[in-house]
Image 1 (cartoon, rainbow, N blue to C red):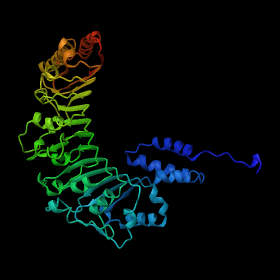
Image 2: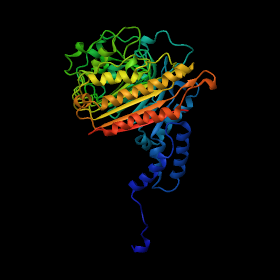
Image 3: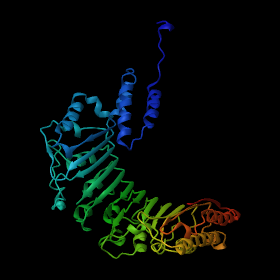
Image 4: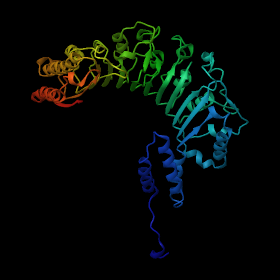
Length: 472
C-alpha cells in the first residue's frame, strides 16, 4: 500500500469530544432545546460511518416511556419497544429513562414491551404518577401494593421501578408527583443507588414503626439526597449511613412524627457518620400539625454528623431569630440565606435580622470554620414614608452590627480559622404611596452600606468580599 492511498483518520474519542461540545450548546432543560439537539444529531449521523455511533449515543441517551398515556396513544410505547427489539444495539446507548405512570392501572403485555425493561446501562430513572382519573384516588394508601411487580407481563410504576432498582446499573432515582406510600424498602435495598431526589412527593400514611424499614439490616448505598416540595421520614434518613449530601429546597422537610435520634442509636452511632454537606430550610423542619422546636430538629441532624463541613441555612425573613447551632468541630463553610417566596410586607419581617445573626455568631465556637457567606434579599411592600425610612435604618444598623462584630476580639476568638467572609445584600422595596412622599435614597444608602463594609478590609487574616445592590 502506497502512502498516497492512506486516508487521514481521526480517533473516535476526538470526534466524540467535538460532537459533545456541540450537544452542550443546546439547553437540556427545555423541550425545544432537546428537540433541536436531536435534529442536529440526525444530520450528523448521515455524515459518515464514524459519526453514526456518536450521534446515536446522544439520540438515545434519554428516552421517555409514556405509560400514563397508553390508553390514548398505545402506538408510542409499542413503537419504542419494537425499535429496541429490532435494533438491539441501541439499548446500550440508553442511560436515562423518564416515565409518567398511571396511578390506578398497569399496562398488561405478552412480552412485546419487555425490551423497555431490559436496558443494561440505565443510570438515571425519573418516574412519577399521572392521575388518570378526575380527582385523587381515595385509596392511595395501598396503591403501590396493588400494582404488579411482574415485568414479564405488566408495564407500570412498580415493575419499572423495581426492575431498575435491582438492575445493578441505576445510580440516580428521581421520584415526582407521588401522594401516598413511597416504597422506601425497595429504594433502600438497591445496592447501586447513589442519589435520591424527591419532587412534590408526600406520604400521609407513613408510620414510624414501618416493619419493612425496621427489618433492613444493611445501610443503604445512597450518598446524596435532595428533597424539593416534599417530606422524607427521619426513619428513612437513618438507614442512609453513607449519606454525604442532604439538601432541602422549596418547602422540603423532614417528617419527625413520633421519631427521635435516640430511637435509632442502636442502628449506628453516630447516625450520620459520612454527612459532609447539609442544606436545610429552618421553617420547614417541622411536620405540619406538630409543635416541634426547630433547634431540637436541627440538632437531630447536626449532633450525629461528626464529618459535616458545609452547612447552609435557608431562613424566612419572618423568623424572629436563628436556632442554636451546636459545636461543630469539622465545619469549614457556613452559609446563611434570608429570603421570602411570597408577598412580604414591612410589618411581616423581623427587624433585627442581621443583629440576631451577630448574636448567634457571638455564641458559636467553630474552630475549623474558614468561609462564612451571608445573603440577605429584602424587598418588602411599604405603605408609608416612615416604613420606607425604617427599611433604610434596618439595613444600616444591621450592617453596622456585622462590621462591629468582625472587628472585635470576640470574632477572632470564636472563629480562629476564618479566612474569608462573603456578604451579599440586595435591598429594595415596592411602594404603595404617592411618589412625592417618598424618602428613599438608593444612592445614599448604597454609599453608606459600602462605606461601612469597607472598614472590614482592616481586619487581619480574613478577606472580606461584599456585593451591595440597592434598587431605585
